[in-house]
Amino acid sequence: MTQIVIHLDTSFLIRALIAGTGEDYELQRWINSGTTLRINAVAWTEFICGPLDAGDLSLAATIVGEPLPFAGDDAVHAAELFNQTGRRRGSLFDCMIAATAIRANAILATGNRIDFQRFRGLRLA
View (tube, rainbow, N blue to C red):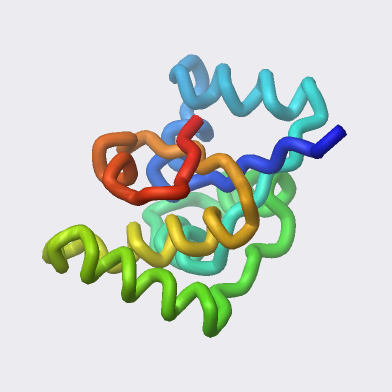
């Protein structure tokens, strides 16, 4: 049986740390079911730019563990995604996040589904 791995996008993680949101509910459900939750270095960078307090940072780090690196193959794939989807201003980080999730064969949990729907091969939660 294959272990489900969910990568958290920045927008999802921010909303998940707010009690009572849909993202908070989903995150708790995944934690309680033993689902593996990760984040890549690009999304983590966006997240730690804040604003956030030390408690949020510590909690998020506990939930997602060490961020997955953005590798050279991810850079190539992100550039392909960027070019294939119209080179949209402000979308490069989304392409980088999507490329890493695709490489890891992970489901991407995002609060901005519409921003990620255009990426072939990406499964969204």
